[in-house]
Amino acid sequence: MYITSITSLQNERIKNLMNLSEKSKFRRRTGLFVIEGYREVLHCIEAGFKIDSIFFNAAIVDDAQLKDIEEKTSASGKGSGNSATRFYSLGKEVYAKVAYREGTEGIIAIVHERRLSLNDIKLPYGKNKGRDENPLILVVESVEKPGNLGALLRTADACGIDAVLVCDPLTDLYNPNLIRASLGGIFTQQVVACTNEEAYQWLKKHGISIFTAQLQDSQWYYDTDFIQPSAIIMGNEATGLTDFWRKVSDSKIKIPMLGELDSLNVSVSAAILCYEAVRQRKSSK
Image 1 (tube, rainbow, N blue to C red):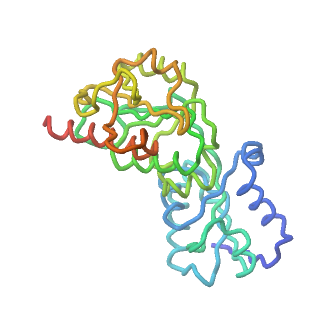
Image 2 (tube, rainbow, N blue to C red; image 1 turned 45 degrees about the vertical axis):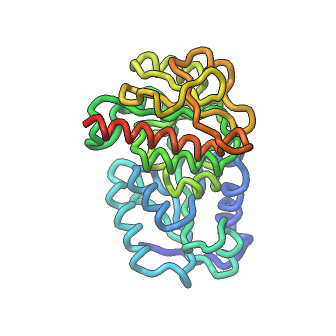
């Protein structure tokens, strides 16, 4: 492992790193994004993403962690080019300036984007999840807050969701806050950005029933059959689902609201519905 030391904020690599952290247009133009944290970096490598460079605070990161990252990038580099990953040691002040979050673990990576299409999705995803070829899909429409979308991806990972379709996205899938909120879930899931129409056609092609989460004309979610191939559709935080999904849904479902308020956070609602699907599928065996 060859390590270059950087002690100045005026270094071009540091300027590039900060632009990638702060500017979505710069990320799209370069096809690169930034992740922070030892665990997140490992998830990214294991998912086969190509790591461009690693920046670390030598006062925090130990040699064992660097060696682990180097070995994993080299092992995955046979197909992705990770073996060419560059390592940079940053001075304390420089790292404090570029670190995105408090309580950082001292590691930041610049990574090449990898955008999946609907045709890339493999069903079922992963090893034996006890569902045979009975997919469970999460669809989120125009979710605006990166933190919410990140939380949805954590739920998807926990529930063994086969794919997450992000329809008409209002946030960058590689926003640093989204990656942080997902705890690396953006790398463990098959995540595809597409239009509503594209998602609908893909779901119908694969015989997947569409369940829209909405209050109007709905049945209780626990009275819904999620054992069949299912797609749970969640809407925007402020306005809910558009008429597009309301019109094409096979069944409309709702969650009891027993207090004064009429809605839950979108990530909380998705967790309730996804875990009900998991419960039903486990109980049916």
